[in-house]
Image (tube, rainbow, N blue to C red; front, side, top):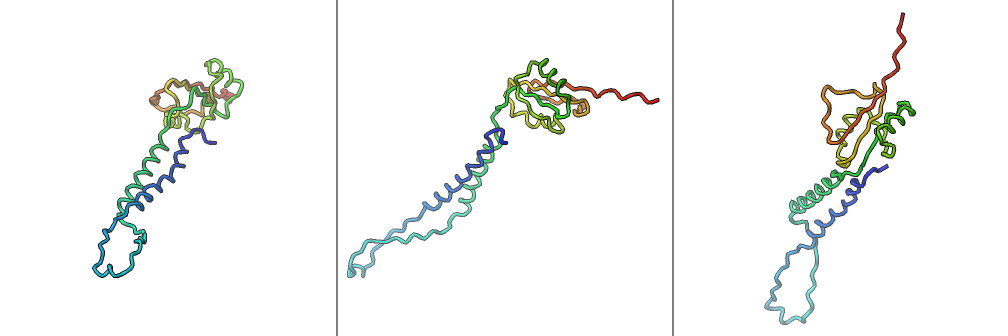
Length: 171
């Protein structure tokens, strides 16, 4: 499932045919000079034989590489499109998760399954969210590995974890 339209920029690759077309259109016109003995021949309309030769290959290569670079840059640029979102651990108790989501006031927010290394993933994909978006992470306590320093997020991120039930003491 494609979640945004930025990969569609790769469909612009046929634009690479433009430099080839421009290169093909650039032809050197030779100045025709009449021969002295041609006055004795019957006149005929000049015919040009178009032979396509690859000239300025380096220029053609540079033009194509510039277009590929532009398309790749556009394909990697993402306009923020996600709003309020809940990142939900698949193994968390559903009733407790719904209670936490409701308590945070994010019942209408979009829900995404929490990937492994959720905080790192969120840091890498943070550009997908609008500046005003709020993020809520609901997970089991052992699912989220907390780093020594809080990762710098540019969005409001709230983390709610459920501690595992205490193990029975052994005698």
